[in-house]
Length: 250
Image 1: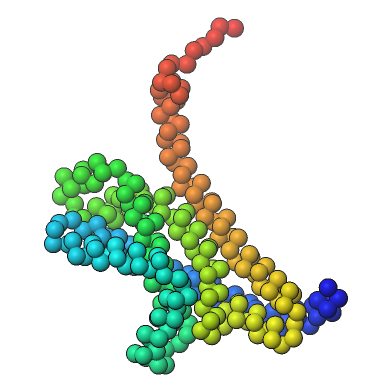
Image 2: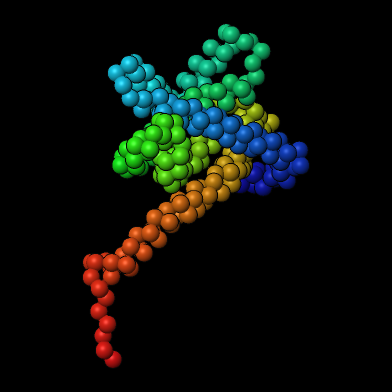
């Protein structure tokens, strides 16, 4: 403890704090860009996976295979596979781009199930009604199904992004200057490991906690209209049992 107190003033210098802030920004950037890219590709994958008709069977099997394979491969292995594949094609590719691609590929497999569950939560009768109105499959998905599926999709998708902020520490294995890599550098400079990694752990908490609050807020905000509609329906029915309320005489 005496060593930590003695090293703390030098550790929390403006230069070190600037390095940690830059690394925290890089961590958030990788998470948002990678997960955003993965979310968009996951929506396309789910759309292809739900393509009807026997001719689309190989396409559906390919989509299912992608999800099942990447959900069972550790993220660190995905990082190395992407690293070696991209460097074989483009040796000058930046490590940041490699990390973002790895995050995106991994995020597709997990967010695809989230999106599929949200789309399937919409009653099939509404999809059939859209078909009767001669809406195309794309129009039905974007205008009818997706707006109603957002309350189901967004909260777990944000929770996944929050959890992935911590998983980005693995990209330090290929030399990306994110928080964990900077912590290793500061520890190698002689600062106590407990001070360095304790500070980095606190920064990870500061990055993820507001996003967790945002996910909880969206979950309550998006679920509120359904609750209000149910409450209004119960009031019109006269109470939870559908009976008219009883007025007692004074």
